[in-house]
Image 1 (cartoon, rainbow, N blue to C red):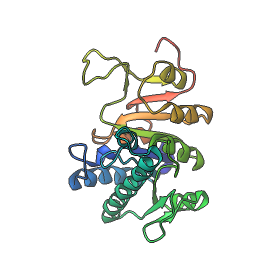
Image 2 (image 1 turned 45 degrees about the vertical axis):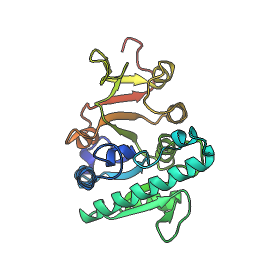
Image 3 (image 1 turned 30 degrees about the horizontal axis):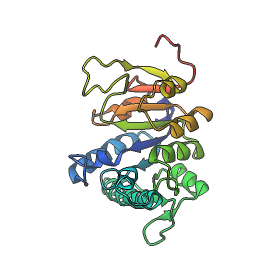
Image 4 (image 1 turned 60 degrees about the horizontal axis):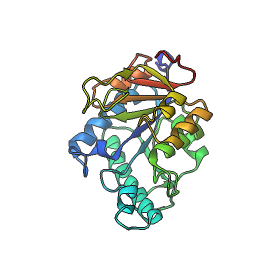
Length: 244
């Protein structure tokens, strides 16, 4: 069945806010629904790695603005991503998937340390791998961690789940005339200052030819549609004509 798919190994980036019904905390029903979407794709034979943010619990940059040391604030944020990852692991395993959490900061009683070759082996064995604690370094976002892990694990695409169905030239919530892009180049996204991912993450994907698809995971079946090669969301890649 996997031969019918466009993407057979993906890196799925979820924001921490996606796990909270109101954007804060963890909503069990929301987590279960997200896990069910992952299962639909996993059952097709897709190898899935995930990176989950921690913004539903803690935002390092926001905390730093209150006077907390930025590096300390970022480390707290990494711990928030571990909590989210463990919750997602529980949800996926209750649906019958075998899941491993690997952390960039070692905490053996909780999860495995991130070891690239071991992560690849888990994927090859059909296990879902959830990559927690970002890159293990302060001053780097989980978007950058997702880009890094996608490249390290030889994923075919980085899928960024958001609250909207792609990339717009303005905030579609505030501006109903905002224009959505079907495709856009890395340089266009960087030059236009579009809030796709932070510039470090975008540049890392650009330099390593890692395509990004920004889509709305709230749309049922969107993840499955993408791995089957259907047009969904916005594709960020190389050399899109300026007229796009």
